[in-house]
Length: 280
Image 1 (cartoon, rainbow, N blue to C red):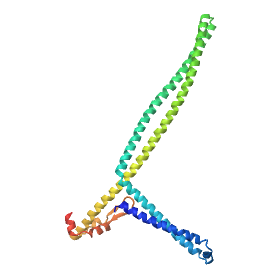
Image 2: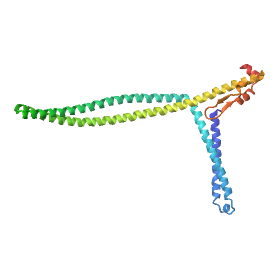
Image 3: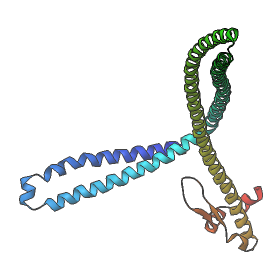
Image 4: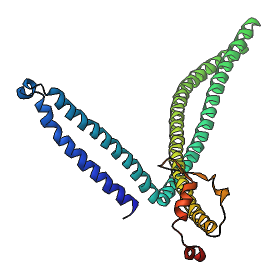
């Protein structure tokens, strides 16, 4: 039976025990309201029975929670290769989306700037033309130039019509500018979303890599301890004192906290005989 199945069996046993204890609570809770219990002054005893069961239920619930954490870790590590491949693919997709969105943003920004500039230039040009026509008319009147006055008046009328047209065009361009600004804001939101999703998946991938490397560390530590146990046994058989190993302290990674020390080598070394050492 592998480690995952062992943990699942242990969890199932705890759940059965917890459910059984929970089933014992209703009679005790009902007993607290019983006249017989009250008359006999046994409320304290009943409350103690309830309290002791609740303490056990809390303990079991915590143990189940810890087992669930271990199971989740082991099951995730079992699928780490496929999960990591999926994370890498998802990150690549979000990165590609961000590149595409940035290209759209650049196109929108360029077009928005062009429309803004065009709108400003057209309305400014129309206003300047009207101003120039009015100035020419005033100068013609001042100099008594009847022909010039007539021509300037015609130019002023044309300039006024052009300004009216330009004003309407400017209004339409402002609508386009507003629409472009809104679309640009939408693209910016999508870019932010792509960046956030990429960061989320990147974080998941890093956590997975971290857990996998912890397991790799522990496996390497076990291999080192196996070799250390044989080294200790060989030293003992040839009458040497492995003093250099006394300070051994290898921190354990992952779900358990602690470290492997000298005693671990002694325990493993005591299991080896000469024939085990010669096989290497």
